[in-house]
Image (cartoon, rainbow, N blue to C red; front, side, top):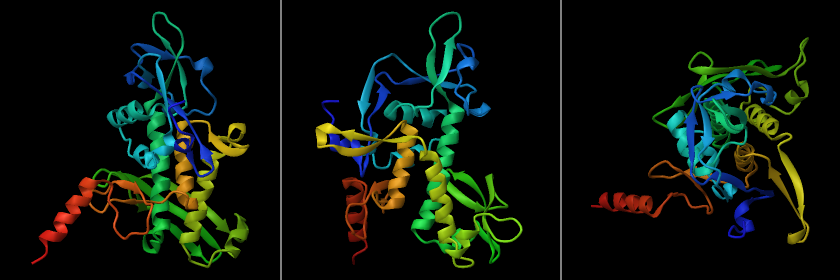
Length: 302
């Protein structure tokens, strides 16, 4: 803690430290461990409890400031299998959604996390990031494929999503394609009233505001009950808001993108996400990419 500067812990009004295992993590399954079903937290779905489970190797923990990793949430959204989850966990730790596991034979209860919970969390955040990128870039044509107005008194979200391996991100599809279907009425007048007051704020057949409404509503759901204010007397009674888990912290990063505290864009050379600190038209994630772009520009000159 003494080696970590407070400003590295913060992003806007939020602050956070998180532990990770000094010796990394490993996968275990039902051959060596079993779930203590009597102690499983309420709300877990079956896919979020089944093996394999991720356990820490050893008890030594190291603390680090996740909010200093400005693209952490976008890296998490690319975790799609055991290998990518393990790589992420070894660098950033567990999500903070532990399950009680008992070693077979003998031993004390240990805490682990299911692969299913990781993949579900990655997918949920990845889909919201895909919606946000379309809203941020005002891509009305693409948003028009998922925001549907059957009449001017009703607006629906109808979409599916899939992970694009080539693009290394979740992409949104019209309702007839892909997986992970979502079909929901966002607002409606008539016999069935669904948030009718929203229709007074949206122009008929607009798509950006309904999409942003859905996005913000889902982010608010993920953060409700997971962020707490604290007064910091050693900083002249400064008030900061602390998330309770690494997963909550990553939803806060999307929150910061939406509110403009955090500005990200992809590198013009390699496509990696990078924080934008200036208003320059070009963006490079490293000196190496900057040099690659420089050589390309000069190679085109006569």
